[in-house]
Structure formats: structure tokens, C-alpha cells
Length: 156
Image (cartoon, rainbow, N blue to C red; front, top):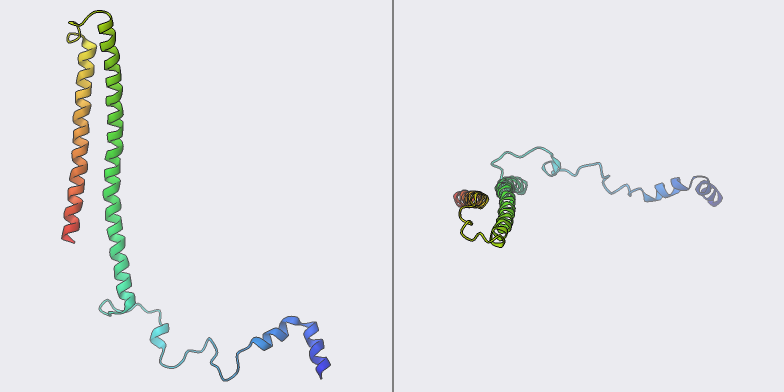
């Protein structure tokens, strides 16, 4: 009899292990549900007024999602304006460099009085003033977006 088990184990090694790992007959099988636990295994969505933990978690996740979406929108709008401000600052810097070069060349040529009369200098001055006004407007837009965001946060 012992030889038969050994031969069976040698011929089919997986069968012997499967037979040994089966649960005893007195324990419930995993696919069987114990009585009285239907609600725990149910995938039905509880009604909204059911104060279960899952309802609270779902509500918290939804609120967190909306909060994150609102903040992402605010910071995206601010980011666009900050990128525009960087470009404006770079343009102002270029104009100052060009203005400095023109002024230097006028002074080197001995035209100290002609500095205010030079058309290129006046044009660059006007361009710098316009860029500075644009810069101020962009910074005001950022402040307005932040104030709107704070008002929305205070209401909630």
C-alpha cells in the first residue's frame, strides 16, 4: 500500500500536494458565505442618507477632487500670467540694453544736448514705459485671481 502512494507521488507530484493542501471538511469553503453576512459582501451602492464609512469616504474624495480641480485652475491661470511677466521683463531688459547702447554712442559722439532730441532714444523710452504698464497690469491680474480664490475659499 505504501508503495502505491510513493508511485502515485512520483508519477504526479502536483496531485499529492493538492490533496494535502485542501481544507478540512469541517471548515467552510471560501466560496461559501456564512449566514448573516450578505450586506458585507454586497456591491450595492448604499443610499446617500446611509451614514456608512464608505459614503463618508466617497463624499470626502469628491470634495477633495473638486478642491484640487479649483486650485489647479487658479494656479494655472496665475502661472500663465507669471510666464507673461517673465517675457515682459526680458523685453524691458532688452530695451534698456539698446537704450544704454544708443545713449553711450550719443555721449561718445559728444551730443549731450542731443540726447533728449534723439528719435531712437524717445522711441525706446516710450516702448519701455508701455512694457512697464503691461507688467503692472499682469501683476494686478494675478492679485485679482488670488483675491477671487480667497473669496471662494472663505465661502466654503
